[in-house]
Image 1: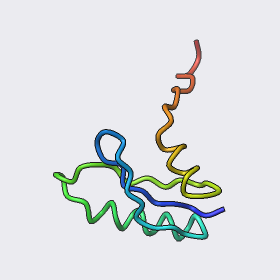
Image 2 (image 1 turned 120 degrees about the horizontal axis):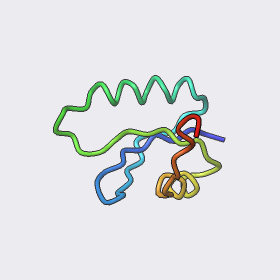
Image 3 (image 1 turned 135 degrees about the vertical axis):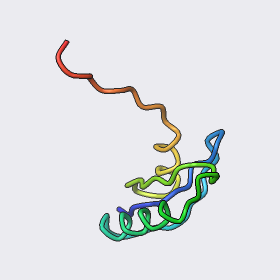
Image 4 (image 1 turned 180 degrees about the vertical axis):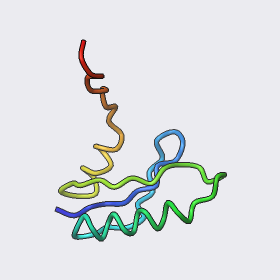
Length: 72
């Protein structure tokens, strides 16, 4: 399964930036893209591991519930 790199803009607008075969390649590319972003750049750059582009976009749009915050 490939790693997809997306720019997530406001209102859940997704823009696919690239696709990599390994996490190491995807991580290096994403870090370089994040370093090139300016303070005024809208959106975040995220990496998603998925079977295909459609699944990656679906996973990026899902709301994640926060995990436990330590001892209760």
